[in-house]
Amino acid sequence: MAARSALLAAGAAALVAVAAVFLLPDPASRLPWAQRGCFADLILANATIYTADPARPFAGAIAVRAGRVLRVGTYDSLKEFKGRDTYELNLSGNVVLPGFIDSHVQLIDGGLQLARVPLRGVRSKAEFISRVKGAVRDKHPGEWVRGGGWNNDFWGGDLPTAAWLDDISPDNPVWLSRMDGHMGLANSLAMKIAGIDKNTNDPVGGTIVRTTEREPTGLLVDAAMKLVFDVVREDSVNERREALLRASKHALMRGVTTVVDVGSYFPGTSEEQTWQDFSDVYEWAHSMGKMMIRVCLFFPMPTWPRVSDLIHERGRSLSGWIHLGGVKAFLDGSLGSSSAWFYEPYVDAPSDYGLQLLDMDVLLNATLESDKSGLQVAIHAIGDKANDMLLHMFDKVVSLNGTKDRRLRIEHAQHLSPGAAKRFGEHGIIASVQPDHLLDDADSAGKKIGVERAERSSYLFRSLLAGGAHLAFGSDWPVSDIYPLQAIRTAMSRKLPGWDEPWISAERLPLDDSLKAHTISAAYACFLDHVVGSLVEGKYADFVVLPSTSWREFAGDIPGHVLATYVNGKQAYP
Image (cartoon, rainbow, N blue to C red; front, side, top):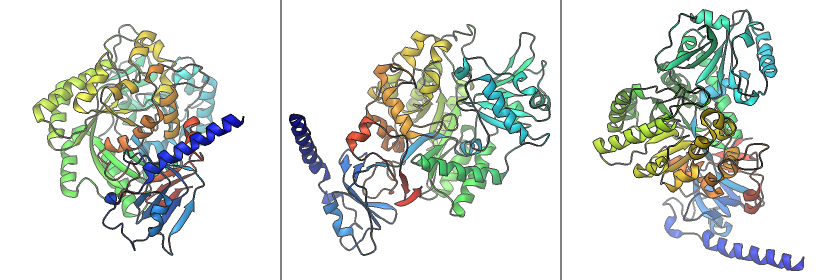
């Protein structure tokens, strides 16, 4: 025991010696306004600060002034910034991280979903029906019942049908989206209102799921969902404004201070909703001083000229809160809805290879024009063929438009063919991935595409990094919950609850890479790495305080919650 104590003491001394090197103040890094006589508003002292800055990975204290980081270093190096009105917070060793950045959300939709029928995690038909029944009870006849988040794989794989709902909702139309957003369930009344029957043709890029007698089952895939979207009552502007505020509070509770909002735009939906949200919700919140987190906004790719004009008129950053990112498009659907585009067919549907949602020539031309206009391009691809087609197309974009810092993004990059991971590095492509989708797919991917295909192609995070990709973590909320600490745990362990062994263990990430994917790499992925993503002088003072009281404790057991979230150096949660 004495020997063990001595070893621990020696190890601690070594750590202190190493830390002392990192924590030495660097006078050359001081900003012009960070001089003697310029006092801090806030000093965090006695903290374990992970900065995400390779020049100084760790620090013990941080000074904040006017919402920005004034100095990072040892407490002694910050004393000159302590004035009469400086508030000093002694953290007693608590771990501090840069504010998390979620690289892929539908923020307003997430806020709306928080107020609808919650079907995430439902594990039986009976529970599914019970939750909907409870929601119907609170509605007047004729009112729409909406909800989402269901995953049929959680109850054995059987897809729900309108028959599950009809007896409990004879007087209320019902629409319930699947967790991936690429499939939804309508009851018979909703289909009647939408004019869906056995004679209705499948729209281009979508599928009406049918019985062997061609009767619609109630399930609509991708563009077919527009048939219901066209008749469902639209959310009012006030409801969407409330949703933004509700979503922002939820994000702050999870330690998220910046998001990339890809908008309420899905195959088959109107391109206008994203623009209406920009003018009626985001600009309203900004003008009223109600913004709580930073947003980087992406708009539907078909509207790229409007985005280009907006940036030309107003710049890329409307303020410290709202940034204009670029444009987004979809190439395929999702694995769970059997609409991700693969080279080989689905095991449970031998004639089905998924859906190609856009013609490649159309997509190439829109991408070329968007890129020429200086817009960042983000395109959804999940299946291995969809990802390969995008990589080929990006080669053409670089060849035709020339080399520049464009930071092309592939959203999801979920299933890759052999060698595809290395191709991301050729043009510095961003792999915008969602670790917690792994929790939904690990148990079902083998059933969908076969065990061998699933295990060689799925969620290749480590291979992508090794191939030179820039990895950016997100949640795809409300598809998965906005929950960076859980996503970091998932990327490191790749274990489902109750599993003893990781799924594809060779693709596990170390802690540092996982943290960077939710901080500085995520900031790089949306051209905001100059203002957020790391705790360095001059950047916004956005950070989270964790319950862990040492780095060893944090690294050994990632906590499930944050103690506090700060934005602009001010406590925003709780």
